[in-house]
Image 1 (cartoon, rainbow, N blue to C red):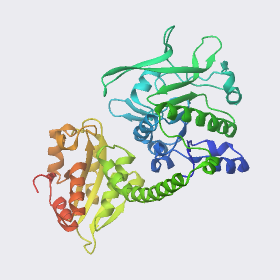
Image 2: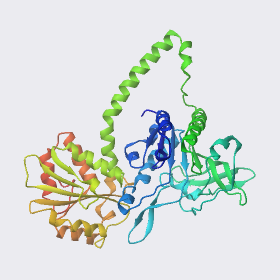
Image 3: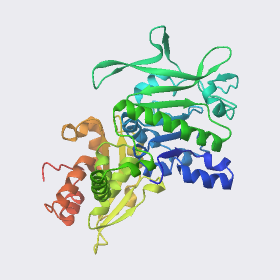
Image 4: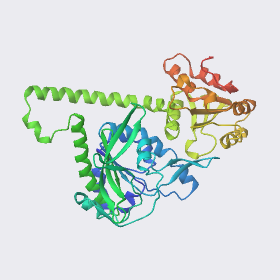
Length: 439
């Protein structure tokens, strides 16, 4: 991380002159939505997210799947820590639609918390372009560069609470009220098209997308810094001091600062070593790109030859062989699911359609993750694959491998309880549901 500001946008770099872009890159880390898969928004103080996407083909649309939902936990962590999230609110785009229900399961707003979206209706409200609105005078320079708005923000109002949103916090079992500060309101209907919303310990700013992205980003850097400092002070946390304060430190203070710097360096080294373990463990609670990254991390640790095909969008995601053994192979199809996979599922048909690619000495492996909000020890195959589907897979000699079982095999390998050859053979010889507990 080179900055305390992250900008996620597919469009921002396209509309900025080269000299200004150079300045902007010195102020903030810029990422497209595809780049953002490898970035932790919670590492930043201020995150600016552009919801405007424009995939032109089905393949381009698939590249966005799970991008928004996978970011949601990170945005939650950032807001809990007092962070600031500015949202450039463009039209709602259905990123992922479940078949055959035709239900929208992910939109370009799903990086925001579920209760937040339910209260504000951002992801489901109409996306009509309008231009007649009045902006807060303290934000006048921002709204000079926003010729259009696409979204209105729903909220409540009464004389006692002012503008606010209310929701039930299931985790803590209480009703929560969050303050809404309007920044831009339509001239005739008095609908909010720009606002700051307190959320947990942080702030979410909903803003019309700017025409002059450079000027808007420079403005938001200053405003975001003010909001972040205010949030941190409200939390009672330590605020970074100005540079000149080093001239007013006692000798004991200087010694402690040196010790703290040394420990911070050591901590950064530990965090670097922790990263691959965190990536691997994310496979237990992820469904999209996070699941792919976690599975890839795990496979890369075994002493195998791994052909990673995840970027090719085909039915097969990995072809695995033992080093020195060119005959036997594990042909792996990876999927995450929020519902049930039944015997008539299109994913199942696609998987079985890949059987001719497996060969006589291969084993087709259906690696699946579901019930991600449940402790893995309480998950069962029947939670997300129907009995009929399991029977069909078993009949076709497919190994059904749960992500949790693969993770436990990986843990055994790291602890030297099983060799990579033993793990390979245990999967290769399984037709039907693999059982780690039965090993």
